[in-house]
Each structure stands twice: as C-alpha cells, then as structure tokens.
Length: 415
Ligand code: PGA
Ligand code: ZN
Image (cartoon, rainbow, N blue to C red):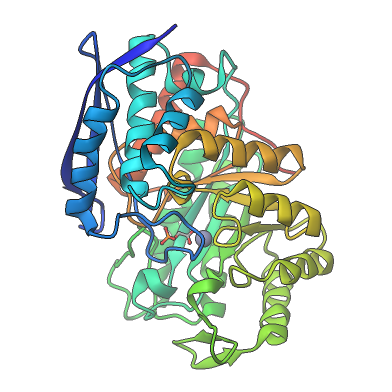
C-alpha cells in the first residue's frame, strides 16, 4: 500500500544536552503526522555522516523547507523507496549536503507517518510481520571520559547487561536495580560522590578505575542475589576520542598515562581478564582494523569486541571488518549513516556474517522511541541505551509496551 506525503515541516528544537536539532514532521495526504528529531554524539567519528550542512542549524532548517517542495505529493510503499528518494534529494553519496539531522529526521519521520497510516507498529512497517524478539539491554552505569569532562574514570563507560532474563521487563528492571545499587555503594565508598551523573545518566565518581570496577561487580552480585538475574560487565573505551594521531598514543587524562598501540592492546587484554569483562567497545581508534582482529584472536569469541567509530554503521566498512575478522560485533547508530534503510542494511550485513548487532543511542538524545523499533526490525542482539533519563527511558518503555501488547519470543541469548 502506498502512502503519500503532503507536507514536510521542520522546527529547531534541542536535544538532551541542549544542542539544537530539528524536529522534522511529515504529514500524509490524509492528515496523518510522523515525527522525529535526530540525536547527536559527543565524539563524531571521522567517517560518520556530518550532522549539519556547512551553514549549521539554520542551513539544516532551510534544507527541510527545500524538502517540503521535493517530497510534495511523493508516494512510497516501502522504507527503502523513501530513502532512495532521500538520496536523490541530497544529490551526493553520503548526505553531506543536507546532513544527518535532516536526512535521518526525514527518514524516521517517514517511517512514523507510514506506520501510523497503515495502522501497524513501526517495526512491522520496517521488517514485515515478524514476531518481536527482544534485544538484551546494554546499559551505561558508571561513566567517565569525554562524557564527564575527563574528571571521572578514564574509561568512557562501564556497562552491564543481564544474561538470563526471561522477558524484556525482567531484563530492564534488573538493570535499573543495578544502577540504583551503584549509587548506594558510591555513597558509601566515594566521599566526594554527590549523586552526579553524566550526559547519559551514568554515575560519575572520583574512585580509581579499579575501585569503580569493584563497585559495579558488587552491585551486580547484590542484585543477582535479590532478583536472580546474572549480569555481564563490559566497557566502551571510545579509543578514537583519546587517540592522539600525531604522537600516536592513547592519552588517559586523569591518570596522566599515555599508551602506544602495543601498550593499549596489552592494557585492554589485561582489563578484560582482570575484571572478567564480556564486552569491549572501541578498544582501539577508528582506523585500526588489524588491531581489532588481533584483540579478537587474543581474547577469543567469548568476549564481544565491538566496533562503533570503526564501523560507523557503514556497510563497506563492516564488510572490511568481516574479512579481517576485526572484532565480532557492530554498533548500529542510525544517525551515523543518515537514514533508516542503510542502518538496517548495515545490521543485516553484520548478522549474516555472524557479527553481533548492537543498536545504540547517542550521548545527546531526543525524546522519541523510534530506535526501539529499529532494534526489533533488525532483531538486534543488544540495545545500548542507558537505563535512566527520560529521553532514554522512553525507548525502554516502548519495548515494554510492545512486549505487553504483542508478546513476542522473549529476550535474545548472546552466548
Ligand atoms: P557518543 O557516545 O554518542 O557521544 O558518540 C556513545 C558511544 O561512544 O557509544
Ligand atoms: Zn562507543
């Protein structure tokens, strides 16, 4: 069935960090509205689609006005059909002219409008009539690096994820308990702890990295004994943002240590072994494909080695990584690639090649649940969204509602 666009509108609004973005809305010929506003990252990977056109947010607003002319009366019957037209509208290969705030805004707003028109949940508009299978929530609970002004731990994120939850409800609520328990333990062990949280709602601490890992493990052990859910613990090193390309070292600002490539690899391997980690994201910078394969060989497939800035949700980079066996998992952030269909294709390329798929939020988020539908549409293995803050909780809530309404096949098993 076809849906037809009558009007496109854009309004400058703000993301969770107070940075401007655009709420794009599409109205169908029947007056049905779809909306979306794109999130933004703190560290925009070198290979991401740029968020804004050259003349910034005002330029982006003008692009939406232009889109109103381009898409007037445009009708489409699938998401790929809409996104192909979006590429023609941009005119380039990578949405450089219009930027991802506009391109993903249009793309997700179109998905929203079409699913409402056809009276189906967005994941079914994107993927057909599938039975939902829920991803494992992967949640940032203790944070540092750029997200905390480099004044907390040097590792950008310590993440937890439930291993044996039967429903998404059990999975999500158990992670929320861990998040709460961490603040309780920090209040006891960190005399400077004020209850402060970073951009993504992860606690920040003046404890050492070592002490921070102990807090997280103690928290998950306590929650396990209370609710019976076991957890894995992982990290996002966000290594591109600490890589100094000139002197070729990774700079750890708080501890004052610089590590060259070999030292960085040894450090990561040691962290994984010492703290029994099962997930490591971006252990090396965005160009080190061979380094990712080496770490995979060193750690084996029991540990997920996941590329974020390395892959930037881009099919050709994922293919490169598959050939070189650079890790075994891929972060999918739709704004890195600027449209929904390409994000789906990227996720498919990963899962067809036995790489795990991790659909992820950005540190600057907006108040839309659409990412939850993308995760279901690609049958993501994990859903990397922090457990608190409204702009994140809305995405978990969407999965809880879908589970209540549609049932589904429970939560994915990773191992
Ligand atoms: P970003 O951080 O959204 O600031 O890029 C999230 C991440 O590195 O995964
Ligand atoms: Zn990351």
